[in-house]
Image (cartoon, rainbow, N blue to C red; front, side, top):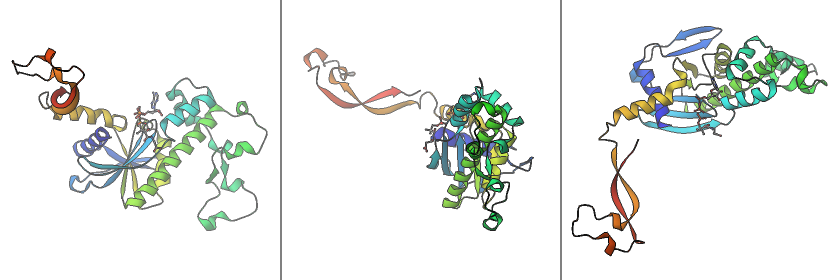
Length: 268
Ligand SMILES: Nc1ncnc2c1ncn2[C@@H]1O[C@H](COP(=O)(O)OP(=O)(O)O)[C@@H](O)[C@H]1O
Ligand SMILES: CC(C)(COP(=O)(O)O)[C@@H](O)C(=O)NCCC(=O)O
């Protein structure tokens, strides 16, 4: 988690045009003022989703998350569409129509005007909900439509949970990272709309999939080889503890006896 935050902080400070908003098909780069970066919410969408409140360099707290993330899209999508690769599944979603699978507010009968409670007739009332209203089997649906509905369901859910966490801590900016996003317009649009309800702004990162790797590289770089020889308390047999004491004979010591001692270990 520390690597993730280190990577995000570095990119946001060092790379021009790293962060951008995405709404109505428009990408708009955001100029980040280094002195006004913190606090922000970092949402990393990998296999699962972590939501981290970042208050500064090395200052962060994982405040929330959800197990419904990139792995869910890929795993469930693979089962439902028989796709062989993530890219294929993503490509399918480009061409799909989620209205075939999702139940929209307008589909719900009863004549109630949901606009009074802030819901338009085209809002999704229930993801995959349309599948219960007829006798269709999975094979009756196009994989494109299933993929699009799944992507929308997962992205929207992540956006909503992120929005609530931003609200919870009064955070104005949410940066979304992780390899799930892949610069995919439909994913970013859905997340943005889910967040857009409130004051917080959804922003995406050009190097979305490399935050952790970059942070790990930077941490390695920061600690030179000498620095990585750290003092660590470990349990080792005392016969190995003679060190430079030339009068010490390990064979005269009880081999079962152990004691805690300081020893230098190399940490990769
Ligand atoms: N080519 C790909 N193959 C597999 N998963 C991919 C691919 N491109 C994007 N993804 C998505 O990225 C997710 C993993 O994201 P990543 O940021 O690498 O997280 P993790 O730390 O869990 O490996 C997958 O669950 C999937 O949704
Ligand atoms: C366990 C993880 C931090 C691992 O990170 P990942 O490899 O998914 O990027 C992440 O999958 C996660 O936060 N899962 C959600 C757990 C939860 O909040 O329910």
